[in-house]
Each structure stands twice: as C-alpha cells, then as structure tokens.
Amino acid sequence: MATVAAHDELNVYESAEARFEIAARQLGLEDGLYRFLKYPNKEITVYIPVVMDDGRMEVFTGYRVQHSLVRGPCKGGIRYSPHVTIDEVRALATWMTWKCAVVDIPFGGAKGGIICDPEKLSRSEIERITRRYTAELSEWLGPEKDVPAPDLGTDEQVMAWVMDTFSMHMRHTVTGVVTGKPLALGGSLGRREATGRGLMMICNKALEKLQLKPSQCRTIVQGFGNVGSIAAELMHETGYKIIGASDVHGGLYNEKGLDVPKLVDWVYRQHKPLPEFPGGERTSSQEILFRPCEVLVPAAIENQITSENAHRVDCKILCEGANGPTTAYADDVLQQKGVFVLPDILANAGGVTVSYFEWVQDRQGFFWRESEVNQRLQDVMDRSFDQVVELREAHKVTSRTAAYMLAIRRVASALRLRGIYA
Ligand code: NAD
Image (cartoon, rainbow, N blue to C red):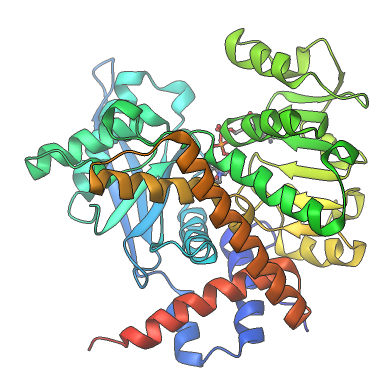
C-alpha cells in the first residue's frame, strides 16, 4: 500500500494523521466517517491568570482538546511543559481515542496541556495554575464528560488539586473526575506501575510470538521516569537483561547488564544523576537507541526515531513506551528492517486501562486488591495484543496499522449505531 507520510516529519499531529489515513484507507472507511474521526470534537484554549510568589501576575496558556465522545467520556492526561503546543495536544488527544479503543475501554480521547516550566515554578504556583485551569474548564470536565490524568510534568498531587477544585465547584466530593490520584483520595492500587507493567506484558507476548525468552533479550530503555524506570525494574525482575538506560541528562551502557534495582535507588532515593551511576559506560540520551539489542523501549518523549536515524536502530522488537517516539516516515524504514513494532497505542495502554479501573472503583466506591488490578490488566493487554496480531496477519499490514484499524473500526461502528444528531 502507498505510504502516507507527514508533511512536516516532526509535527506529531501530522504523524498521527498519517497513521490514521493509512488505516482508514485499508479499512475502506466512508468519506463522512473519515472526516468526522479526523477532527477533534472540541478544542478549548484558556488564559490562566496567576499571582506568582513574588506578587507579579502572569498569564499562562492552557489547552484541553476533546477528540471523541463517541464511545464514552473523554479520557486523557494533562501535560505541563514549556514545549506544549496546540498541535501536540491535538495529536495526543487523537491517540487517546485510538488507545482506549484498541484496549476496548469505554472512553473517547482527550488531552490537556499548559505552557509552563514546572522546574521553574514553586509548588504553590503550580497549585494556583492547576486550580485556575480546572475552574476555567469545570463545565467541560466530570466523570461522565471528561476525565483527566497525569502526564509529563504533572503527578498525583496535581490530580488531587484538580479533584478538590472540581469538587468545590460541584459542592460535593467527586473522586471520579480524575485518575492517577493518591490512594487516600480514591486512587487505585497498581496505577503508578500500570504503564510500565503493561509495556512488559505486551513485550512478553511478542517474545512468545517470536519464540524468545526474556534471558535472551538484551534490552535498552530510553527515559527513566514513571514509565521507563518501572518497565526496566519489572523487566529486570522477569529476566530481561537491561544493558542500557538513559534520561534527559545522558545514557548508561553495560553489555553485561545494569544492576537496575541499584540504578533506581541511585536516581530515586539518592537523587543522583543517572549517567553518573558507577556500573556502566556513559553515552548520550539518544545514542543509546542505536546500540544492538533485542528489545528497544523508547519511553521518554516524541520524535526520537526519525527517517534520519531509523536505519541505525538495531533491535528485533521496538516497544513504544512514550507517545509518538517514532515518526511516520521512520515507520517504513523499520518495516524494511523487519523490526517487530509494538505501537504506542497498544504498548503503553496499560496506564489508561488501570485509569479506567480507578474510575470504575471510584464510581462503585469499592476498591480492588492490587493482584486483582494486575490480573485484569493482564487480561486486557493479552487480549488486545492477540487482536492486533490477528488483524496484522489477516491484512498483511504492520502492527501499527493493525492497531489503528482495530481502533478505528470500533469507534466507527459505535458512531454508525449512534448516528449523527441533527
Ligand atoms: P516522566 O516525566 O516521569 O519521565 C520522562 C523521562 O524521560 C525522564 O526520565 C526524563 O529525564 C526522560 N527524558 C526527557 N527527555 C529526554 C531525552 N531527550 N532523552 C532521554 N530521556 C529523556 O514521564 P512518564 O510519565 O514516564 O512519560 C514518558 C512518556 O510516556 C511520555 O511520552 C508520556 O506521554 C508517555 N506515557 C506515559 C504514561 C503514564 O502513565 N505515565 C502512559 C502512557 C504514555
């Protein structure tokens, strides 16, 4: 099939669109549905006035994009970063729609972002920004409308402030308005680890398919935050040999395998820079991606594997922990090289799946054991992997196209049943 590539390779929205287009074409999606699903349902921009600690007033720009409400309330994180753009938020919202549909949970996609640098803000400034952003959006949020979660630069505490602000406006406590909350406020056991755990579950399925054992898999993880460090820890426990890891400060490589529990302790309990860990050779954050390995896990940021460097990737399995780590142009190169790609909308869907479990538990007011959460997650990830692989083989397409096809088919069939309200 002819490739559809993004016009501007590094524009993540164009990258998301390019993948949607290939899958929609393969499915023979009707023109009207194609147009409906291509564009977001709503894009909200808010200008957030905040009094800073020194008494100055600043105005921050925030977005919330709701891509689809067809299969249920919108779901998607809130990102605080100086690099947030409306195109990025739009792409991430679109990916959330497809991600929720791939794992068949009853949500549509949304994403939010505020252009700010959390590293340069005090906790109380972040609290005021969060509360005003939530207040501005309060009519669009709610357990039945749109349910945010953490993303880059936001955490459990930020979710607690969103929940409290929304609850103050509603005049009663509404725990189900956000997920990724602290346990004491209706969070779920297993949520913090869910994306990394889901990533490993999907990798395990790929290994089974390729008849490999974890002990035969040299593994490299780019990004050592929530997703990357937990994936590395769990994969290490399962027997994968983690030979490389990196974060924004640089990378570490050891062909004999890194001592992951000690590295986690070094970064998270001793708060020391990852590249200074005494147990590996220093390399750069990006160069680590091109060392030979069986499993490569980009779990940092977008656009790491591009048409410029994809030929240097030397792995059997690419398991995408980050959203959009591979550009649409790079897809072709990886396909020619025979890399088994586990696309982001499948591989990192463990987080939103356990967010769904959190939302269900909040609405029931009944909380599950951690083993129960993990078992349900395992069922969802295994089933989703099998369905994607089945489509991939039936249509002779890449796993990424198959995942998009599965997702688009589910959303389109819900839309056909609902019809268009006029
Ligand atoms: P995080 O902020 O906890 O960690 C990000 C990590 O990436 C940090 O270690 C940071 O140092 C590193 N990093 C940043 N820039 C880098 C660079 N240029 N090179 C190498 N490392 C770099 O964020 P997270 O929650 O782990 O999210 C990581 C990615 O996974 C994002 O794309 C996010 O959208 C995606 N994701 C997260 C979740 C979740 O549940 N947290 C779920 C699905 C997808």
